Length: 183
Image (cartoon, rainbow, N blue to C red; front, side, top):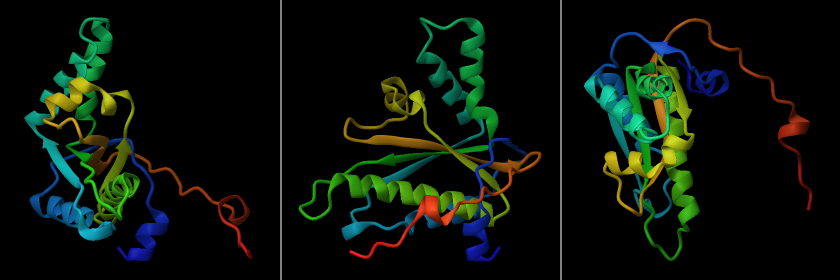
């Protein structure tokens, strides 16, 4: 798919499934993430790839966040959440202290890496969606995934084969999204 077409047509795809993502596809996704803007080349981003049995293990981690408060139906829902796609990529940022690069720029670099993953998935004919929510910030999840105290989990990117209809690309009006500034 042409790069401009990819950028202008990509949408989030919440209904994913199908076969596993191939090693070649995963390589493209990770190489795209590594091309994100990164002021001073600090490399604050890292990504965990979860698939196969790891998805069930992640479901157990999700359920552990509410094991003492949730009913059985809620626990089953939490356990099944990772199984919504054959691959989950966990985006992690570990900001580095740097005189010229503030922490927020490093968070944005990881976010740009995630956007590159989403665009690369679309260009490969795959669907993807970036999810956060309370589980992304829960200390039980951070601990289970091996994050250090200074690392931030910035989201879960679900990647898979598109199942069903894809929503249409929303139109964005110039006047609501950008405007000229003349000083």
